[in-house]
Length: 193
Ligand code: GRF
Image 1 (cartoon, protein in one colour):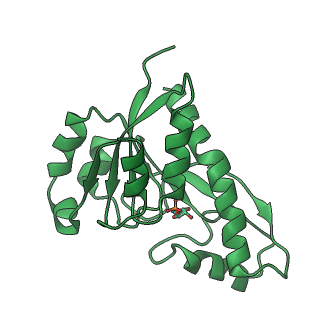
Image 2 (cartoon, rainbow, N blue to C red):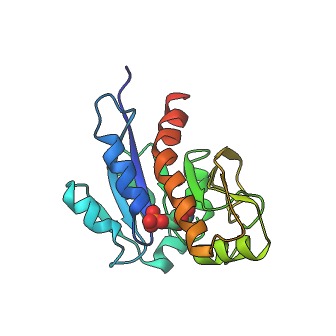
């Protein structure tokens, strides 16, 4: 078994996926270690999860993140091999995409290429899925490039939607699939290197 890869999880909100990924990493022989958690907000819930597990954290300032590559030296200091976006809302700047080619993944709460792009996050996505009368939805895990939700797709998981399902119900179904699969897919990508 090779050395586990060091991953950094980037979040903006509640961090339920970050929690699942951290918990998954604690099992024996996991192919990755969560070496850092990066948040775009000082009150992002996932920061508490990281603190519970003594994982180093960093809170980003938007202008610095977008305009200067200071973050790269911090990621290097922590020996980060791979970046996992888990509810991270900011567009990833070119310098970061170029420094981590095919080494940044995201999870989007709909079946891309439908219901993606700027402004398509959180309940906006599930309301749009409901309004379109879709009969299924589910998360897409994809590589990250400089455009929102357009990188190559790695995996998709779907669940049926019935006409009675509210947008909130759809959100809950999709999130359950995210929790069940994201960490495993990350590990599979890393093992394929
Ligand atoms: C998830 O629905 C994910 O698909 C999207 O943002 C949400 C994050 O939820 N990118 P959480 O912060 O992990 O609970």
